[in-house]
Image (tube, rainbow, N blue to C red; front, top):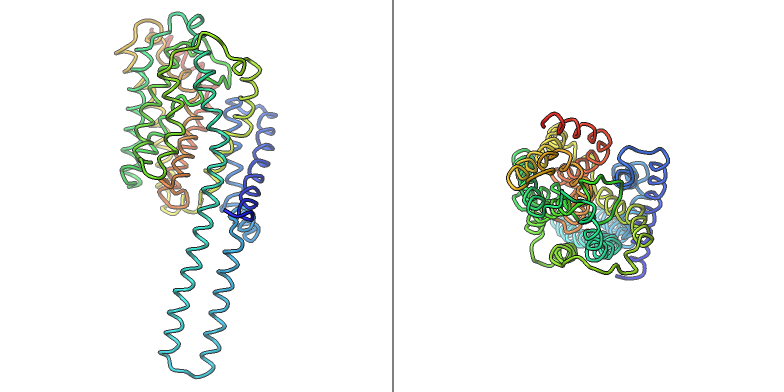
Length: 426
């Protein structure tokens, strides 16, 4: 990619980052429900929508094309080609030549215009791909450090604090069952209501399942029940199910490295034992720095890079159906997580996780589940498995983002309900 293309990509990312910083600061100032993760996800959603084709593209199309889409030279080449063709046809008609000659010229011009359009589309795709790679380059090293280093140190500390809730079998088993119930219910809805192909639908269902990519990073206060090994392995069980769906959708082709970038550090954190010595870069201060980068920049940027491609008109193109799907699927996903976790805990757990199944599921999933969902959604969009500019792709993208955002925003209200539900069930 040449220097001009890099400047265009940098301009796009700079505008998104600037909008993200302002919105995160605003939401943190007004104390948005859900805390820091909710502020980050909502800031990314709004930044992408405001600078996307639905708002910026409608209010100022020339500026949107120049600043957000880029490919100025290729667009100018296409416009000049079309203008030259019109002038050539007008001049030929005035000479009084036969219609056959005019048709031959028009056919040659259509072929030339198609080549110019393909060059423009390729330039747009290259810039979107580069912007996505930059966003992932910000996030991937943070994920690797969290999962491979900080996470294992945090797990060792959790064994002394979590006490009775440290059940690896209970956590992993309930996480897998929870992910299967939530993922399969979402898959059925996507296939039935949106008629998505099987593999893209499996990828979206995997994204909805969520997981443990950001579990080692304490983004908010966690109660004791969410600090032990059971909660960590519950999140890993969800991640295992999610990776099956997302990995099947992406495949092992040229885009398979996106899958590997996330899978390798997660598998390493799962397979490697906890460290006995805490490295200098996993101290409290280092974790605070990583948390600031993730919540103020990396996480909202991947959300914004997803929503900036969303075409709102496509979401409404099929009437109220997509909206109804999103609402139904959000309810089904949330219920699926709790039903599956309850079934898993009743099967595998003995003791407090079983007695407090609702609260355990809520806190273990909310530790990083919604944030992981939006990261998986970004990967699906960046690898062109899901196209947010199409009708089904826009609905599927809205499903993942709205589900994650709704879960984050309702946490403060759900905690008392979960305690009351568990108390009533004992």
